[in-house]
Length: 432
Image (cartoon, rainbow, N blue to C red):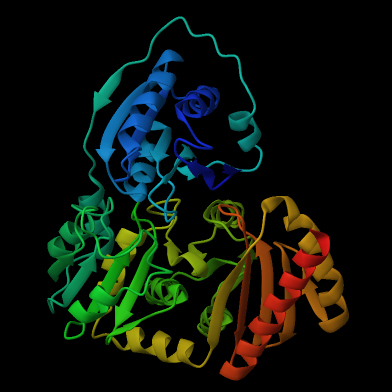
């Protein structure tokens, strides 16, 4: 089981069960000052059981629960702004047999100070039982106000991936003026896995080949991957397009995660904007956004663009609309052409989480000898030159060490990744 500010995740029925749901939701109740909590789930088979159990735990502690049923994560975040707290039953892009919980306070994910209050036992005594109410969301209308109408009626294919974006992403795109074809609408018979960043998306590539763009969502609808001209784009392109739209709207202050493409940072600064870097993780990006009053930004590795004025989370659905509004616009091609001159590779090594810290420590000492500049903001980032870097960090959600690299030279990037992966594997072999 993983317990981080990104949420609690595990394999349902093995290291995550209903007893855990009761315990963590009981603890979460102590953070809900409004005595109101919005709850929603994605399409995982275990979702209904977990949602019902979570609802019972919250109500036992006097919390009034407002039920959205099956909705994307951004919808729960949006509604949580109105009610004061929110809970998403999801483990995002993890395999179907996983599930988890994302905790929301005042419209944002929990931070490092609040996490211990959820994972450490709390005694809560309430004399009054909370109530349960079914509600709907104004999310689509709210998002349309941000995006506006699109006059040129672009043809778009949406790959739902069997997830909760069904009924939201296609409906929003149609409402703003797009012609939409939908594939993989239901989990049963879905041709791909829950994570569009790692899937080949062959059906979407085929279906969108003669259309202007294709969009693929993860199971809870906060991640977005783009297919253009029959080619799957790296997740950073999603963020880059969102950033280009933000600059077009006049926004200047951005926060990017430490593993986001340097091409996006350079594009922002050349347009007169400023960039600050955060730790990897949606909650870390948003935490720095709030501290610095940033106007936009996000996390390249997860295909996550964030617009704080609308939502304090990765916004796959809103972003699909914002990107669609740029189709046929020179700004769309400008950011794509700019990013094409950089090459980024993301890879991973399966490593028992008990060994993560020791491996990071070993690699740090070797990076310090090899690279002139080192950042330890999140894992170890070696700055090779102004156009090249490498980062290793432990995953917040899986038993993995993640390795990312970027360069304006493709062969150089491949060599950086190859050498660093070997270094991680050697360190793991040594300490086991």
